[in-house]
Length: 65
Image (cartoon, rainbow, N blue to C red; front, side, top):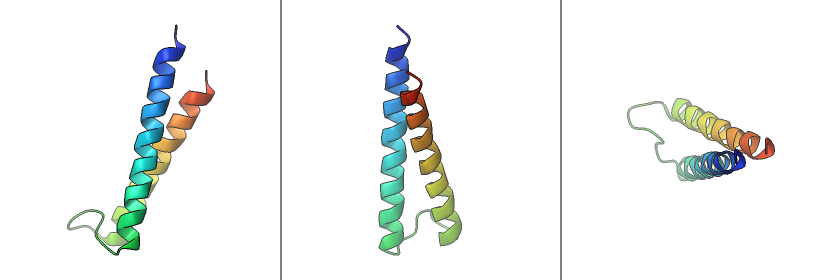
């Protein structure tokens, strides 16, 4: 009964984290800004950290089944 919400949350976190990492990597590779009016290094670092955290949270939720 409790595995349904854990699977849903894990998949959502994993997809969001992976998409954010791919998007951030693409923006950095093309030398485009990740966020407006913010340092490129700071915004790429923050977005990469958030993507990694979300992906890790998704993996954690999926391994707790």
